Each structure stands twice: as structure tokens, then as C-alpha cells.
Image 1 (cartoon, helix red, strand yellow):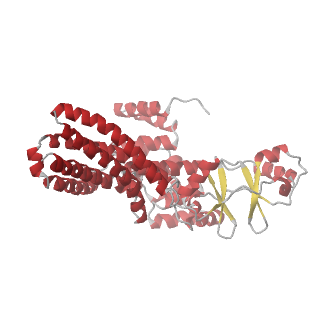
Image 2 (image 1 turned 180 degrees about the horizontal axis):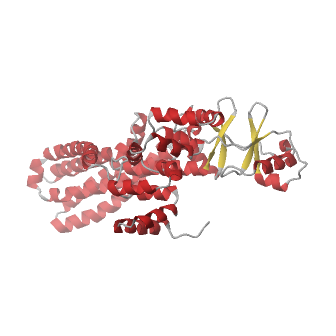
Length: 449
């Protein structure tokens, strides 16, 4: 690995150079960055500066850079490129990356890209495009190196020397029969350390797992995480080897999933341009502000039913945010845990009840603990033991309901086909506000009136 300054420092210096108006140093600096770093720079620039820098990016890097960009930024740059530039960008990509790239191109350009490929590359590309993009088949590359089980390691070594190089992230060759059916893997270390006279069938690993082409990319990422894989074969429904998935592709899946979960919890799109036009950004965010407003009115409606109680015991109005906030934090902790566990496939029908019981127990313990603290403060503040009792009971009730909601809301949303990361926090906030206000004001009207 070459010694270079950290990418953050390089990008910062490049931005400063760009601001100074000196274009030649900017162009030289761009050549020192990899495609992912160039994409990061483009995302961080306002549109006018972004377009200027994009013109200076080497045509050989265009395709890779575009693949690292969010959809909205990528679409804007593609609109500025002519057909010849798009075809040139596509020609520089590996087959799996090209399959992703074609999704974002106009149909006329896609057809011209396909015509520019030779017969072998076109067939490999079509085998990837035959699967949905979010499956193992859509994620795979077709650059597999295969051997037959009946040849010796000496033959394999001579074959590899004849090839001259191996695809990136190759840690094993795949053993197939004459029909292409997958039989096992032949690790590179065995090729180097075993006797050249050994037959492949005697040294290959038959238990090396393969991934069905129809498997979701999320499950693929879990497999790589659990087994510390570098690469793994992909099979079609008939057991025929059709490609392989490598760790660099899985890292992209994990990063995209993390960005989706983080942005969705705020009602945002992970593909939104940082410098998107104000009108479009305001329109998208207004939707979730409107949904949040409806939930706020639901809480206000509950408060309105206890107007007389609040007027009689003003201290309740002062303490309302405490109960709602404590319930919201407790529920959010459980909700975050659930969303993460669902994403990792750790939640199923067999452990839901145990998890619910555990979260309710945690909420009860924390509810009692903090109820004592809050009740003590409220009692001393307003010099009322009954008021202290009311807020303590309300806080415990809201903590327990918030924990139950944090467990059940993601499960219900997932069952009805709604992304828990997208809508979970909004629903949870409504529950904790409504329950918190109802518990405090309801108990207050009974005990204090």
C-alpha cells in the first residue's frame, strides 16, 4: 500500500485549491485520488463547482466514480454527458459494475453499450442482468476461474502460469464437472503446498458453501460477516456455477444498508443530493413534517381532554415534557435495537416473546429507578407528595408501554410491508407522547382533583 496522506486531508486541500481558482493543481490532485475519493469530493461540492471538477476527471475513471455517487448526483452528471462519453465510461467497468451502471442509463445508450461489447462479455453481462439487482445474482461477477476434478495440481499450476493473472480477491479456484455443476473449491494455498502429482478431487474442499443466485443481498452480507469470507461462488437453481461475489461488493451493500437505516429514521432518502435544489428538498421533507404534525395533534387532542385538570394543577403542565421525553428515549433505545436486529436477521417468531419480556423487565427497572428520582425532585419542587406519586406512576407506565411499542412497532410495520427504519420513530413518538400525557393527566385528575 502506498503511503499517502489521509483522504480527508487530501480532499480538504483540494477544496481549498478549488476555491483559490487554480485549476491546474486541482487536476493534478484529482489524478492522485481513487474513484471513491473523487465521488466523495463531488458530493461535497455545490453544483457549479461539482460540474467544473467533473470535467477534469479522467474519462477512464468516469464509470467507477459514477457508481460511487448517490442516485440524485449521478443522474445530474449523466444528463451532462453525451452518448460517446457514457459508452467510454461503461467500457472501463467490470461486468458486475457495468450491470449496475446500465440501470441508470437511457435505453438508447444501453443498447449501444451492449452492441459495443464482444460476444463473451455480452453473454456474461446478460447472465448478471437476468437477476434482480438486490440478489446474489445481480451482485455477482462472472470472472470465475474453474478447474476439473480429474486433473493434477501440476496441470493447474501450468494453467495459472499461462493465464498470467487472477481476478481480484481470488482466494480459491472453483471445481466444476463437464456440465459446469459446482463441486467444491480449491484454495490457492493447497495448489502451492501440496504435491504437484495430487489430483484436484483429492485435495479440494467439498464443504465450501455456495450462495443461490436468488438469495437477497442482505443475506449475502450476513453470510460474509458470519464466515469471514473473501469470495464465494454463486449457483443457479440447477447447481451450475454462474459467478462469484467478492468482499468489495459486500462492503458496498453493508454501507448502503447502514446509510438507508440512518437516513430513513429521519424520513430522508440516502440518495438525496447534499446540495439538492431547495424546492425539491423542501417538498420531500414537508411530507414527513406533515405526518409528524398529525401525530402532534393526536397528543394535543389528549391534552385538550384534561384542560380543566391542567388549569387546576398547573404543575402538571410543567412536568408533562419530562414524562413524554423519558418514555421517548426509552422507547427509542428499544426501537433502535429492534431495527438493527431485524436487519441482521436475529429476530424470528421463536424469540420475540423472550425479547419482549426482557425489554419490559429493563423498562420496569429503569422506570422505577428514575420515577424515584423524578418524584423526589417534583415533590420538593412543588411541595406535594401526591404530585410526586402521580408523576412516578405516569413515568413507570410510559416506560413500560414505550418498551412494548419499541418491540412491537417494527414487527408490525415489517409484516404490513413498511420499512421499520422509515416509519418506526414517528409511530413510537406518537405512542409515547399520547400514553405519557394520558397517564400523567389521567392520574392527576383522579388523585389531585
